[in-house]
Amino acid sequence: MSPPNTAQQAASLTTEMHDLSTGRIRRALRAARQIGLLGLVGLARQHGLRKSVGFAAQNIRHVIAHQLAQRWDRKYGVDTAGSIQLDALTIIGPNRQFGNESVCTSPKSFDFMMHSLPDDLARFTFVDIGAGKSRTLLLASRYNFAKIVGVEFAKELVDCAAQNIAAFKADWQACHDLEIVQADATQYRFPETPLVLFFYNPFCKAIFDVVLGNIVTSLKVHPRDCYVIYGSSSHNAIGWAKPAIMRTGRFEEIAAPPMPWFFDAVRGVDYAVFRSK
Ligand SMILES: C[S@@+](CC[C@H](N)C(=O)[O-])C[C@H]1O[C@@H](n2cnc3c(N)ncnc32)[C@H](O)[C@@H]1O
Image (cartoon, rainbow, N blue to C red):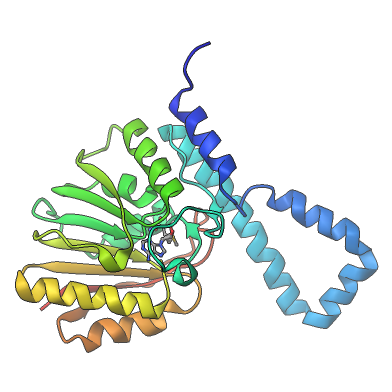
């Protein structure tokens, strides 16, 4: 019997994970059958037509984005798609309850946010705080970063990310120094190089405040250029992350155009970009 290839290994890891993106249509049809037509009409009445149409549209958008994510994965021989729930994962540290599910940033949204950075990134280390299955690390490798690091507290996601990094092949790859680190974000020590720090709504404000404090301390001890990209698509995280970053007095916000509607994004993304002063 031949040894399993990377795609098979990734698939076996995925089955251990509780993924809310797969089987979404099946679950919706099963629920609709159970409730029946009259029940559906009753629900639409209860919640209002606008809310019901919005709910259906959000689910259709999710299904399309998930298909596109799987297509991207097949193209590059990796496994980054899905909405992986944290409840069943092996997590380092005490902060499971403050973390958000692992949903990866869409390729189009990521490239759009990267427009706000300088053209030459050769001095910078890119760090994704809450890196999930490593999609952003792979996407960041298109840019000429000195090094790319992902910090993730769930062991299964770290294992999956490590397999992805090993398997990934793209003729556009400019940075080949990619690393995934298993750590709670609050315990992570930032590299003493110029930094691009990426957050896609990984955790709640209490954890973000600790991580932000660590960033500020690190910049005080080793003054250097630092950009922060903060993306958020739910929980209105940008609403508290932006004021928290500005209150440190160490960053200024860079004017950035609003994110367009991209088909490959599970949800709309609000984002902001900051530069150290
Ligand atoms: C919304 S996903 C973002 C994934 C990835 N950054 C991207 O944009 O494609 C958030 C990730 O943060 C991780 N996370 C949550 N709390 C964390 C913590 N305290 N330390 C490290 N990772 C954490 C979750 O496991 C999850 O994979």
